[in-house]
Length: 331
Length: 241
Image 1: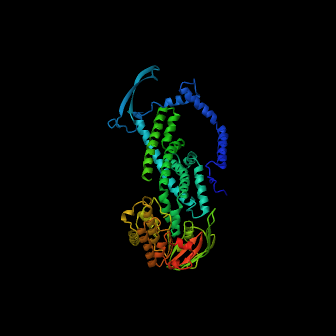
Image 2 (image 1 turned 45 degrees about the horizontal axis):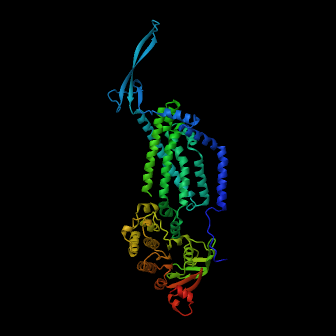
Image 3 (image 1 turned 135 degrees about the horizontal axis):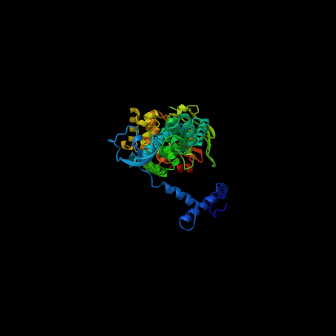
């Protein structure tokens, strides 16, 4: 060997890496054809050009524009006929509410004279300027409660699955395989499908929602927690194991302190996701804001739909800020 | 009291040559055996193998005449070269991790008085104080972490102390204090010590016996005074100086 020659330094992009990248690009090209990525880009580009005044028409821009235009103005107030409100007390109106009276000219056939007679009907309405906003807030709160309990169930199921499913602490490889399979099964059943079955079993309402979210996200947490545990620094675990510490002691003292920030981040993300999915599973009757959303959508009340979408957005944004603070605190 | 028998021990690392080759040693119970050698000589591999962290390719490893039993592990105190502390956990939790108490008590910080007294004694001897207990291990300096690792290894009154360069990150005075603590604790407990060191002077001062490794083989095995005797090859004499 010639000592004057410099050593060969390994390159980041070797033949194997280039072959893998080429294979990945080929796969993307093939699947892109099947899911019409080219058409998607063409239509989106057309919409952008139409918005910029550089194209005359765009199917996408027209469709989206007309739908979005119907979402505003959003609906904040509510108006209910007083005669239909049970136990209505005009002296104890809700905050900011007032009574409105409408007069309607009604034409009726008099059965005795068989002549058409006209008279005026007075109808009293209870108008609450923020009535619908409060109603949406209450439904959103129910969604948050469903998401919270779904997340609690997910943690309670996901943590044991992770302890059995992590290679470095599982008592037996067969238990690891079983736990990983159970996590994969729970993830494979989408919340919406689980909710459909659970609504049949438990009836309409939040129970089906809580269980659908809890079981599905338990599959995610079981996997994420286990992956976090497997990725930990083995040295503290090995040191404790060498000194005779048991599995639980190793988990509590050498693993948990390492994975706690990731576990918290995963759990907060699961809660965030459950809030969003909690808005969807209501579509099949599993409680929460989704039920309200579907009802208003089916009645073409897009102003109400706009209010609901804004409420969901505000809650997700708030949760994101809270989660960010929590992650910083546990870093 | 546990003696350690190592017979024809060979360890091979993946993709590398033999880290240990035909190492045969008998370390009587209560003996302080220092292991010297240049970097890469096999000192850490020997300690990690005795601790059960590396599987020996060939040879036998006996504790009190039998292969290491799970129950005997509770009688080992290990000071890893890289400290192996749980960085995000407090110093208290790191040390008490080897105390034989339940997880719930450990989480609640309800440590038995005897363990608290022993931890206080060890940490104070190592120059740490009460303010360090609540600090995260990864917020400590390398030397402080090394001292925490020493305290953790001694807390449960081990019968075998395996110390892999336990004073590498310490200044000379603190290093001497730490080695003195290990030796005194070992004497009080009757513990057998295998301690790898880079400082021959410390080995001569604290060890009952010195084993020198070179390329995974034992090239010297004897009392410290023997290093100064006639017939010692110059290469070994240079390492031991």
